[in-house]
Length: 307
View 1 (cartoon, rainbow, N blue to C red):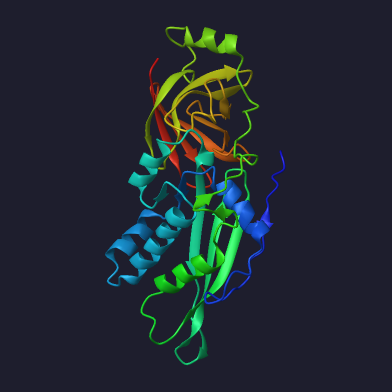
View 2: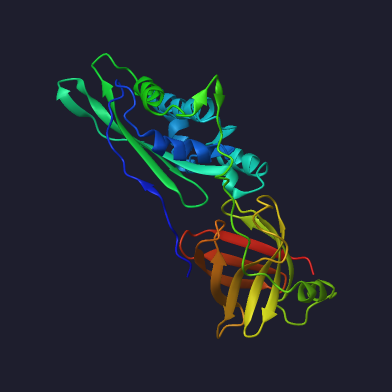
């Protein structure tokens, strides 16, 4: 299996009331990569979003808005993904998963220096499509008069996370660090695929052409072919809803191995980033409908036969 190399920037604590002690080289990595990104995905679950929306306190909303403002105003991103609807809309505007950076933040427990005077540990993390991971940590100084963490957060961003190549009101972007996934190495023979698609029907019932019917999580795949190859079956990409630069028609997205049951197969499914595989199970509900269950994250894809 191909090794994954990850760049890790170790976190450190910096007062939100002091000016930047962050190496410009580390910030340079962030801004050179972020310049090729359109959206930040906060990866908030529906439960987390509902908790923020329904919270009796406005502090959670203000904290979220502080992160959104930072993403748009300082990082120059087009948008920030909070809800599932926003994710579907943003992804539809993306040619590649590299147009999205996964971003998370956390605020730790209050640590007192003297009574109500103290600080909160704060961390913000970025994960890019090439597996580059960046983490920045600060202390948010507060007093008994501080009513919301949002203001110290904004001060921390301004003091510590400005673009080191920001001049004359413009971001100086790096063009030699473009984020791009490698071409898929598993591809079905083009002549074989054309011959397969030219068939009007398929005697071997698992084989055929299928459209995505439903998904419990967002997925780029829209149409697949199930093609027998030796003892195995291949899941071949035919159409994508988005990330069309990453996955082309003919790319093999997964492989299935038959079991003792004619309704069940097990196999592997390549991740959207192409550097990992998930264990899956294939369940034939009937001749025209099947499900793919992901063992690690409980995602379920349901496909309906086209022919």
